[in-house]
Image 1 (cartoon, rainbow, N blue to C red):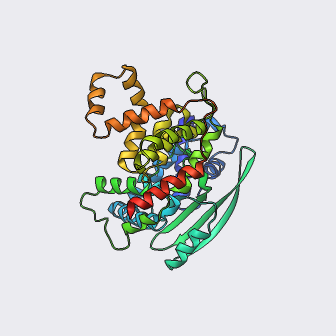
Image 2 (cartoon, helix red, strand yellow):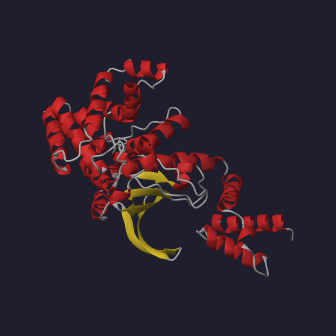
Length: 370
């Protein structure tokens, strides 16, 4: 059999095994298919990719399930949204086939949650009267063993909730199919997807209560992001003061001197470099992604443009971008944030702690809410 035909035959048989739920992992499905079709050894280069197998699985789904598959996908995405809002405090992210649309009969709904203990998650599931079991599975890959915690929930659709440590909420997970960052959606991103793909869909069902979002306390995440900056070394040319956390605390002190009453501005000063421990060469976008849904639009804009403000001050920013910045009602505050950023680079300056800074902003937020 020619190599191309053999490769396709292995992919077809592996896809059939996975569609029929005989196998759940791409690698084992490929190896079983190759063993059935070949008497001899098959080189790794001769095996189909995960993407090839997934495409064939989708062909089976379209052939055998028809229009019901599309209708079922919407119901699964709405069920995912309801579950995510129940578990909002654990920063849920929808991943897998329900996210990408590559579902088939029997697909479950995969969510990533971030918590250092599963107890709080179990408490919510029990309060909702949901049936579930906790599974801890040891996986060995590339000679390294890790234990993964899965919570399997049985409802209208089955869920697999994979629980990761709280400090991994900003970690970039890679797909076994593409090798690239997996597609995932927060609650807000899933709602945007639903409105775009299903115009007129009602997201305001009683069980999808927006009040759940009020339960989320963002300050523990702020603390994690800030403490991680202590390990981020910076160029002495631009930052003679030292690590990114020391710089951040200096900027916060400067900001408090001029805007002690402005919670949103102070948060922007405190979190403007939060992404440096995630993606040092794209720290602005990394910070905005990690803080998505936890800060106001104004705070997010100040963080988003704080590097642009350096170009503005240096006179190197293009005319169109200058006009866009100048037209924003928070432009003056952006320039003040820039001054605080530049001023927070003094070796030996006295600063407070992360907890003191967060406590100041939290107290201010509570005062402003009264």
